[in-house]
Amino acid sequence: MRVSESGTGTTRRAILRGVALGGVGIATTSLLTPQSAVATDAGSGLAVPGVDVVIDDSHATREVTTLVRNYLARKSEADPDGTMTFFSRNPVTYVDAVLGWSWYDWNSLRAALHQFMPNWPSDGRSYPTRILGDSSGAIVFFTDTEGLFGPSEIRAVGVVDFRHRKITRQIDYWDGRHFGVADAAKLKVSSDQFPADFGESTVGENAAPTMKNISSRLARALREGDGASAARLFAPGAVFEDVPAHVQITGPRSIGSYLTGAAGLLPYAGRGTSVRHIVGSAVGGGYEWTASDGTVPRGVTALELDEWGRITRLTAMWDGSLVEDSALVALAQQAIEH
Image (cartoon, rainbow, N blue to C red; front, top):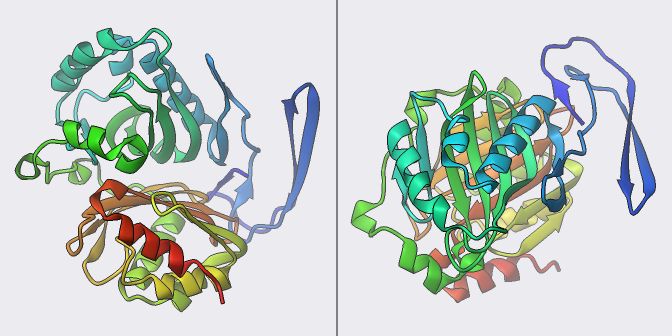
């Protein structure tokens, strides 16, 4: 579903989407009755060049899907100068929030790509799998295959801000455990060299009002440990997933119970948490968060919303390599229902 906040009144449209799978066309029809949004079109079903993946852009505009697809396709070609054409000259910020690698100007980022890309394997790829948002800002789920930045693949969640179709800020979050704890540790900068500036002040807050509202309300409920209030923000069939914890829960009641029971364990809950930056449209986006307490200082929460502004899917990403095995076990135990 794609919607914009520019419409008024109640609109009913049937959205028909056909995707060919194994030569068989599968069509789904959705009848929408939004209160303050207008449906425009369904996901594009764009494939990724050289990769057997169809991008899930059901909560993104066609414009940002095409932009991200072309950007990562050029990156996959190991073309540093071509890749840099997708970035703003000024401002530009790029931070890997797990490793602490950071660049704050166009020339230094270009120099880094010229250092990295000649060493990439010929079959290396960087490709998007899910995109949430629009050309002002988006959450991009993407994969860097093994060999690009180490011996394992990286499945990252990038927070990307745009201005005039150019990237002004990109912050990548991923799980160091999936990459390999020892391998990630070898690449991380020392804690005293880890960047404190993530560049959000250079781009401002341009997310849609609906995304700002739901992100702020959710973050406040989590900060207060109020799982019941958080649960009321979710749609009836909503899915909550925490990637590093390997937890997936369905339905507001169960989600609320989990958020209440795990309030003292989740890195994005509790009094020390706050919102760093929000991006996205009325139906897709999310927020970066920081935590002054605990061992996980930062992460991102991606949100898919329905036409009434309710959360239909939440995906949390943070660096699981920063916590002990016992912490992940405790998070999983809280998901056991009684």
